[in-house]
Length: 213
Image (cartoon, rainbow, N blue to C red):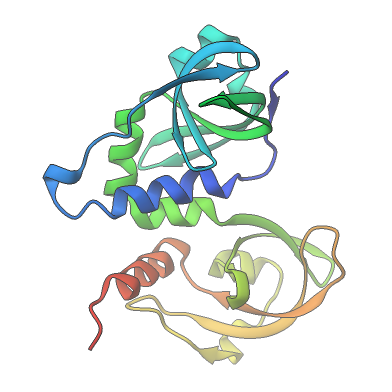
C-alpha cells in the first residue's frame, strides 16, 4: 500500500541536493546509479542514497504507485512528487513507510538540482505554522527560526520592518521574535525571518560555499 505524503519530505530533496552540489567538476557530475530492490514486495529499480529513495515516473506507473496523489513541488520547472511507500527492500534490508520522490526522469531531476540549488533548498524547507492564530506558509530554519516571505508577513500584519536587520548575502532580511506554533506543539517564542525565500537561500548557499578568510 502506497499513500501520498501530505507534508514535504525534506530528506528526499536535501540529501540528493548535497550530493549534487558536492560534485566540484564536470567529470564528477554523474547521475546517481539505480539499484535493484523491492517496493511493496515487487522487484523495482530506483536510486537509493542513505535513507533517500528516488524513482522515475515510468517505474512508479509500472508498479501502480499513485504518485500524482502525493505532494508536488517543482525544482527548476522539474516536478517532484513526494510519496510514502509501504515497504522498500535494498540489499536484503527492508524499511516500512519509506519516504520517496518520483520524478519524470532521474537525470533531468539531478540536473535541475545542480542548476537551481537555492530553489531546491527552499522547497525542501517548506512548512506550515501558526502566528497569532493565523496559519502561515513558511520555511523551517531549524534553530534559526521560521522564514516568511514579505507577502506572507504583510498578509498577517506582521510588523517586521520594526525588527532588526539580518541580511544574508545580497538578500535583505528582518528578524522579529514572536510566538510561533509548529505542528501540534504549543506556541513558543521563535525568531521569524522575513525575506524573499529564493534570495535568502541563495545567500545561505553562497555563505556556506565561501572560503574561510
